Image (cartoon, rainbow, N blue to C red):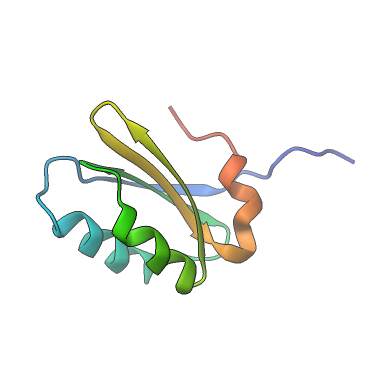
Length: 90
């Protein structure tokens, strides 16, 4: 049996050109349509600290990393937490 992480659909939101609070609003709106087994990759103009607690309270798992041009945030349903370590498309 393989220990490989299964492929998961990844939806990309590049929000780096938007002013606050638009990135957070768009992420939350997109999460309403996120299906089990899918991930959302959001590129934001800043580290989304205010959003992180809200995600956890709403049943989502995430991996947030600061980047030179903002932050990279991978989000999935908490039950799909294992998908956070799966490779992302280039």
